[in-house]
Amino acid sequence: MNKWIPHMGALLAGLFFATATLAQSGRLTVDADRAELDESKGFSVYSGNVQLRQQNIALTGDRLTVSRPDAQTLTATMVGEPARLTHQPQGSDAPVIATAGTMTYDTRSRVLTLEGSARIERGADTLSADRIEYNLTDQRMRAAGGESERVRITIPAPELPDSP
Image 1: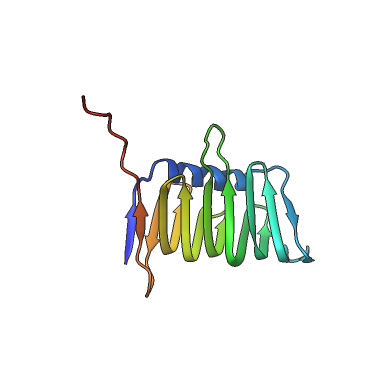
Image 2: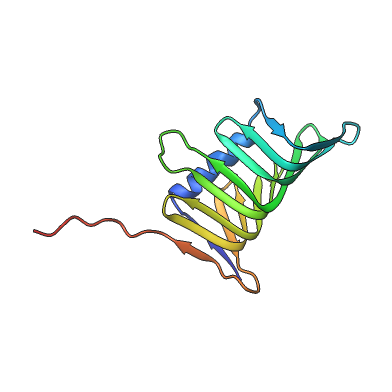
């Protein structure tokens, strides 16, 4: 069952800035045990303890596949057990941590997709589902449960002032 989740405050903002930062031009560093590159096809595969870093974002997993069929399009897919994205937003104590079996970002559609035990955390706010899609253009998130996992959102209650 799909549900559109219109707003999750800090959790969404953190994921938005993490993905937007990855989409920006700038120095991107990838470390891996092995790499296979085919520049004529705009395709590369990094495998074995893959670590991608850019500014205040780290993405880790077992295998990263990058496809760049033209100058305007880039699709990157990280697979892991789990693949993990960590982003430390400026001015925030709590990092955004996203985990899933597979994470895919497509620059043309501007959609980040997390599949397979997907989870996003920022402080005590959490969202977990079998699949989470985040559209950067309209800042909307869609979460879907699977056969054994329903969508779960945890938002802590605000602290109330003490009564006199």
